[in-house]
Length: 223
Image (cartoon, rainbow, N blue to C red; front, side, top):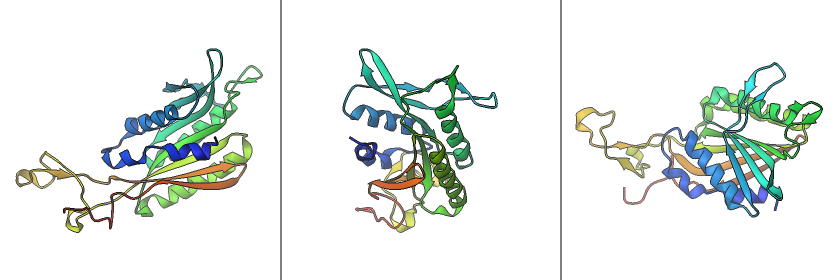
């Protein structure tokens, strides 16, 4: 199967039930996805650090490996999960460095087929759009310089409001309303949608996974 087909197996239905920044949770989601695919798989989390062309150390979150022969696994993908917008661009540069690093005359990761940057993106894009546009333009440029596919996976979050009956869950704890508030509703949940952009030698392919289960303008039953 192609990587494009493999992405359809991402567990999107779990997303609205992941609360908070979810860095580790999204790493877990990618690991679950990798093991759900056919053939024997192995994951290294976090990945081994490398030294870039300027002598700085960089580390990726996940090595995604597939059995090659015997007990030997090939590193097919290297992934970064970054939920902080100002760091998106730098994390893409880290992934690019993994495609170029060598030991002597040999590439350190000769079997590498793709690099993947997983980001969290607000449904209301005003605060994210400029940084995101810079990111995808750079991803396209990087894909023209390397043989590997460059993948940006965008997990979409939403602004929701109790007054619009968009809140689908609450937690039993005091919230921002002080001692009169007995529970606190989720803020900026995942909508359940994932948009994946794959660049291959500058060519773009967009894959949409999941559907909007919660979020702005999505009324929740029973509220």
